[in-house]
Image (cartoon, rainbow, N blue to C red; front, side, top):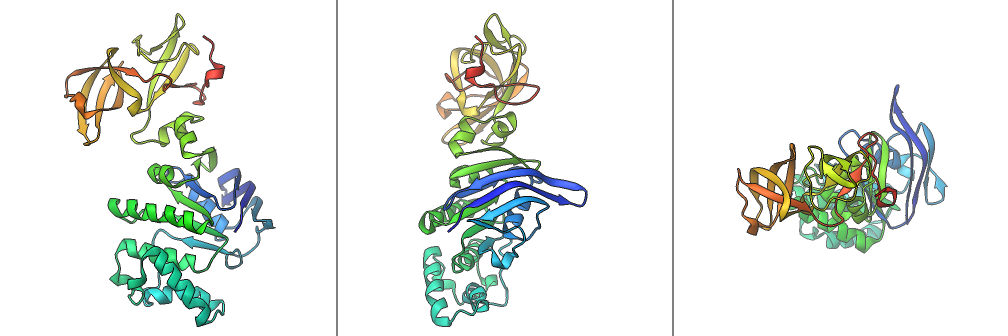
Length: 354
């Protein structure tokens, strides 16, 4: 298998630069997820890796080989597309064997590869069916099987779950992660769904406007985001952001409300970030007027107004909040994050002046 090294890569469409200067190293056998909003450049980067888009500057290495000018067919990469891209007139078996036949492999060489991929993906009963006779989840498994039989150095996935319903998405997501653990092949997965990123990745690459905002494990980007964009993008519901200011060594919300659990004063003006699950109902907490309650079974989302700001808190269903009530809230110890409101970068504890 192979690592991927990207050095100062640039990509332009006409006069528009979509990836201005990107560097990233993907280790051999690593499962990397590129995540970000629509238009952030993640799919463009994937197509550059695949050789479907040219490079305007920088270097791309797969293993030790520079592949800037190597055509897609010679990069030893397999790509799984959002729309499956299966041949409708071929059976599942024919879809999976076609690329191998084009390479000149014999039927005796191809058959065990197809059988093993079908076993891994649980599609052996469908090998003689055509794609139109399959469900969306089955078609996506066939698309993955077609990639597996090629035994590539790198697998690329371009939002492969976006056409599936919620239940199938969760099922196929788990299957892809299990497949990664079985095959131990380098995999790059593109999605705009941060839940997919959190549950699948060895490391997440968070992108915005063609630039990498942060690279880290799911735990790192969730617990220690470098800026407000990453903090707000990763997590569902999104992090709450509240203006605050230092007063007499304490950090208070913008209207002077004391919110228990905030750190000591770090600056005159800051933005405090609190994830919904890090709000805690407490008797000495700040008053928040409840606007809407969403019971989810295992927990409850409370939409409320706190210090003139709209927030979402995740609380136990045992709290039994009701719209119109006042819920007194604090923040779990050490869980409030502090950001510079001008640069939107994180102010870390070591930078705090108490």
